[in-house]
Amino acid sequence: MPIMLTVYIGSIEASTLIIIDRKVQSVAGAVGDLVARSDKEILTKDLKDYFRAASGIMTPYSSQDVRQVVTAVKVASNGTTSVLWQSKFERGTYTAVRTTALPRTYRLPDEMIAISKGQMVIAAEASYSYTPLYGIVIGQEIDLYRSNFFMTRFEDEIKLVP
View (cartoon, one colour):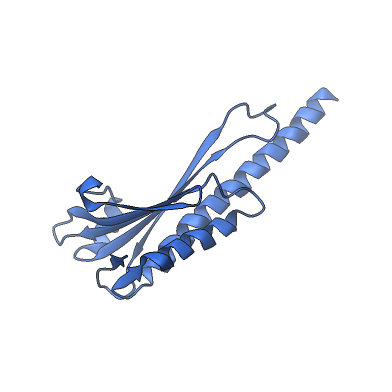
């Protein structure tokens, strides 16, 4: 009986972890895709709405622990990258990071650089700290992280407008 109970609880925790991981992937994908569809500029208020809407994907699990980051990266024709702007959404609070506080480059996968030379890439990231339901089988928090990369739809730079 104790073995069967442990297997049962373990399967519940594992399936919950898999579901939440997929939801984190969907959050990163939804925000990045919406931003990449913008034509030349995106308003800060619209970006806040995108973050809030993507947080709803986490339902029925708490969206308070989801951290979302969108970074606009310019890829030069020689393959070097430069960060143009970045926005974050965490615990219901939106933050536009100042350009001077950003790193000068952004590490993109080689495949993404190869297809996006001379263009802009939207990097969307989502992270979540999963706390096990019972802590019997999985005894510690697990940090989940997912990222997606999107090329802009209109091949122009997208500016973040306050």
